[in-house]
Image (cartoon, rainbow, N blue to C red; front, top):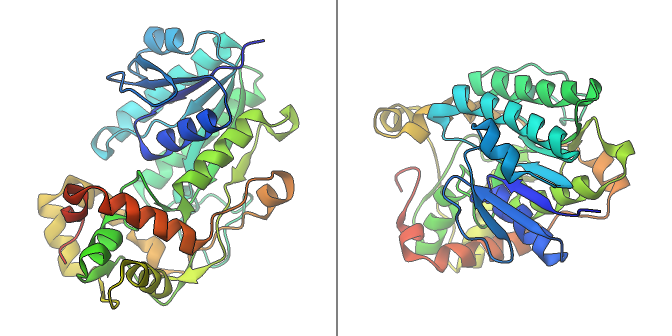
Amino acid sequence: MNTTHVVVGASGGIGRAVCAELVRRGLPVRAVTRSGTPVTGAEAIAADATDPPAIRAACRDAAVVHHCMNPPFASWRSAFPAATRALLHAAGAAGARLVFADDTWMYGRVDAPMREDTPVAPVSGKGVLRAWLAEMVLAAHARGEVETVIGRAPELWGPGVESLLAGGIFASAAEGRTARWPGDPDLPMTAGYTPDVGAALVELGLAPASATGRVWHTPVPPPITGRDFVERVFATAGHPPRLGRITPAMVAGLRLVSPVAREGAELLYQFEQPFLVDDSAFRATFPTRATSWDEGIATTLAWYRADPVRTRRRLVPA
């Protein structure tokens, strides 16, 4: 019986985390990127996920296909649906399970902790697209074309990923400069630590068939406020906390010069409301638990400090 896990999008933060967890468990890994980027402990394959014949060849004989691809925002509307269709067909042809790495943007503005049965009510174009892709993945399972399961994580942070909770906070703390929070820093929030999300996606790939055909929220640590998070990062960095906010004027300016900021601005609503994810279903079913805030902060800060160029690069001005 083949036990190979194929990770598509292996060069991204979540893809790298999935590969690392699979290697840690001693499972055979095939890491697929457009350029065939080497991944420690894995067989590296070059393939374009939007090219059906190429991705079908890359997924040959797979037991599990991890869909961790996350195209640049500018090509989301074309590349993401095309890649998802191709991967569903490739996994189905191989008789493999497809594990889809998802996020919470389809829930929109909420006034309670997000659960797997929270109504889908996106308020951004990216949320609409995410909702469509998730429905595509679950519909393929319902039709019996391919076994699928979705791991859904909130805003990401941790080593190997750039996000609103990454460079703008950790790079600034490492140098003792002002960190810019993307919303109200006194609201409670949860976030997905990349190694935990990777481990959860591996769990879903190995789970009994009874766990498939549905969405699981990946594990998160207990809620804290943005202010508490930033203060912990600065304390670990050995600097007094310096906290500011990303103002509307900053957003307007950044949208003129930064494609990432321009595309990401529509997601800032998440930080103007309590941003809480309920992971109780996953915790009741699987052994993987969330890393503590303090442990994750120490590891992430070390990752930034290991690369001076990365530390100097920020998403927002200090």
